[in-house]
Image (cartoon, rainbow, N blue to C red):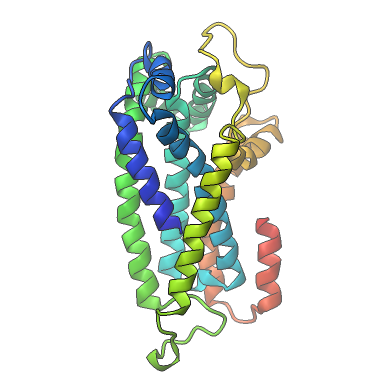
Length: 290
């Protein structure tokens, strides 16, 4: 299902590129032009926008399954999976900023400013990502280039993820490697693929009925360079990061715990080599993850 969603995102994004302008003056208007003037442009834009949420929903459920079945024992599969999640978050953030609305513009400033906590070269990192001394047109061009190129790197990582998966065999509660005990593809997994297709179609119907269910109203407002929003709230899949940053008065501590909250998943590969972990421990990890 994740592979199908990734292909949908790449295909719809490729079509949107033809009408999107990465100019700081025209980017917001180009999105509106795509929505109201281009034939079926509204559909592909909403498809691209809403399927990000489905991507994260299925990704988080995939991680829950991994905890439940102790998939962190498969070190290669788990490590590449965590890296995939990090890049998915990065690509989603870049696309969020590219709308160039009031909320996305100020969110871009806030998130990139977090790099200032890096010692010695924090300011240099900010200037590198901004491409200037202000967050503006150069930043948007750089973000657009990364947002266009990184999904292909994501596909490359997916192949590595699948390679390690087939090398270790798929995760289960017994972890057998014998070919005699494995199931045939048809009809079991063929039926599961049909369920995946029905899930995609059901979500497609949902976002056609409520296309802006996951949106903030400031995403429809042009940038005001002089006034920032009272509350800069990200999309729902970044709310965990927002909660961590808002929980501490120290910017350095908040950023440190934010990165730790993601990278801590890499530490689970060391649990796979420890004995004594039972099903109760796995269920406990599921609760902690939620």
